[in-house]
Length: 263
Image (cartoon, rainbow, N blue to C red; front, side):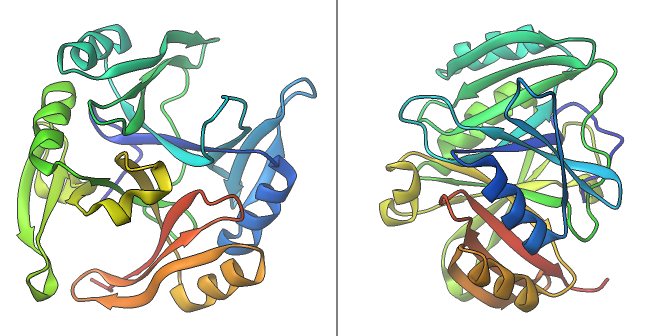
């Protein structure tokens, strides 16, 4: 589970970049019950809140050639040290470490195969206010063409601990991710080796996506379909996990909806 006492290597923040901020605010409001809070007038973007608590960010996509997508940020003690580890492991620095006023220090990267992710060195802000609850982040997941390479790279950058479990029906292996030095109950994500067809959204590159908890997966999927999004897979029941669906927002940013199995 993800908790808000963020430790090094745990997901702590996320935002989505899209070409149409008001349309995205409307979509996620309908699907996840989020309220949108714009930032200053000169900035096209803002924060999503659930029951008054910050759950994610939203911004205008400005990078030329970039696809609309969710960006997941992981806590680090030192963004500059993380940057050196990324470069040593064959990754690329997309945004060099920079201070976000008094709130913290961030940087964005690509892994050696092009999968994008980010880090957050906390200042006054540790990250989002709500996780592992309906309408908030409950898991993170990487689709990659090279699971062994991903384990090596992200293990070196974050010190993550990995454990494998077989996929249902013998369809491969799912690798579970736990922050360094933490017990299994602090497990926060997974990675899956997939074929080229499953990476078409990112032009064949690996990609991370967030998993959002919802009280009723089928009802949330109906809102996805009814508000301009699409469903790539599901809803389906995963034994011991819950009922889930892989979805795209109106701009094809991907995310997963999950109604967790009780207990």
